[in-house]
Length: 174
Image (cartoon, rainbow, N blue to C red; front, side):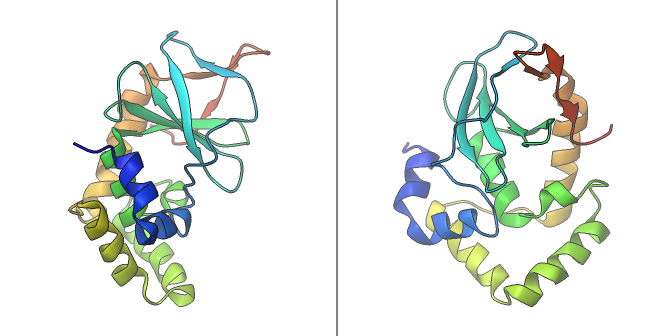
């Protein structure tokens, strides 16, 4: 099976959607600060966003590894288990960082704002998913999974600012 990273790089329409509104760029994998996981597991930056945040693969393996997101303000959260799950999150709920309550209602309010600026959002998303060969769950399912991963599993993926030795703050409260 071809890697999903390679597929994103090859599928221009999908890469464009992931870049915006997904705010996900495979060319921004370097984090601005030296960090490590408290567990000592491997940490590999592979993508970033326009505000200086970084997506990291955690542990050993390939694209199936857990993915931690660290923003540039000292916050971090486990956001997906495997790259397909992260890409689905970015396709279905690209405004996930603003869904602090993980509710469908909160997300509907945010989607309305995005649709004002990008009326063809759903069509573009669906074409990007098709180009990558990904089926899309509904928004409530994606948000429930984000809540589960970020608040239940995230305790095992504490990001430490290496020079100072203190942990990043959780992006989402349990």
